[in-house]
Image (cartoon, rainbow, N blue to C red; front, side, top):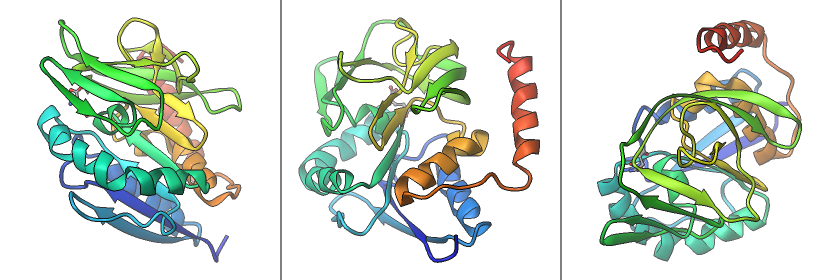
Length: 243
Ligand code: GLN
């Protein structure tokens, strides 16, 4: 595998990084390193440009409403075209929670409505009711049959997918997109959006590898030690009653 390099662009690392979303980046770095795949990390905050040709994987983590409000306009006005061009040429994207919400058309919070990238047909609204908080297990399907993902969610926004969009998976435990329709996340081509923090990738290393594969167009074998990881996952699932 030596020779390839995973080039990541982490959008708004200072604003969109709650629940240790940075752990997702560290995990990707380690799994590349262990395989002899190079790793380059770029970041872009407010006002900083994005080169559509310089990255294989775009990442945006979660954020509080206040932080999302700080970045939403910059994202849409300053970075949308570059992101759309990069995705069109085969780059991948992982967006978690607040980042996931900003993939869609808008995030309506009472009197205020934040614009979104509109890269996926989804809308997020604050509705009366409790925040959706707790551990989540879903059956995720990236087109190769269902696989389990475990994580943690904490969101006030409820997300509704357009009819033509495909959720990332079905909720086995937890609330998912809106606490009503039983779906979690979205999966559109090389774009994955999800409410799962955790951090997501250290809890679900198979998804980390899938992202590397999608971003680089390669196939990976599991790493030594992944069977231990899987065994720990299984026992956590049994404890949650969803093995
Ligand atoms: N601020 C958003 C919400 O509460 C996203 C939260 C998050 O990223 N955990 O819905």
